[in-house]
Image (cartoon, rainbow, N blue to C red; front, side, top):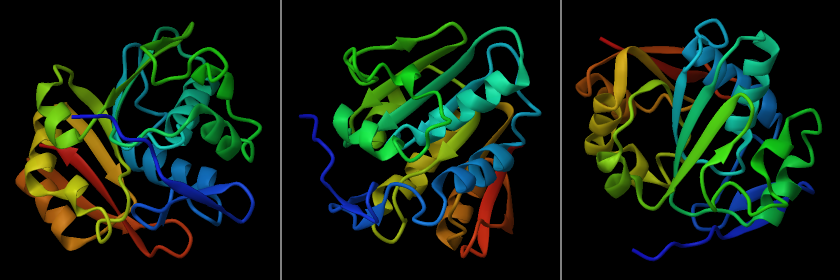
Length: 222
């Protein structure tokens, strides 16, 4: 399958919005705060961090989630390596990522090596992390992945606009690629997503969301 680039427009200055899915890449209110609430808090991070902790993600987007996790990892001052594996069907251009992340000056953007090929060219390594991005449809690429995640960031576009990334068979693959006691979190509380996670072997809880989103979903592999 031929790789496809992201198609986007800019709103409110530097907020990228996918024209393919008519959905923003991060919250128009406060994308960083939402990421911390949903994906860090929803996976009990940074409390669970340890050497070799492995995060997997559906939807790399701008890299905001990775950078937020890396910032939290470094703030925890733990020894060792954070592993981050993301699945992305429509990668953004490096310049687009750089523009989008310019509104978050405190994040360690240099970790993405945007001036040296960027994160999509190959595995990106740093003194305390290893980042791998798998390009292509996750319905095809995830079944072939040999990893096991301690925590999943489920961050595809809205289920109403990108249902392919929330189908039960794909969530089954998420479950199969989750370590015992591993977790998953997502901003959506859509019923069919929660049921799909339950069918994949997760204990699912609906909890308060961020900002105007009343609810989000936390899940733990049973």
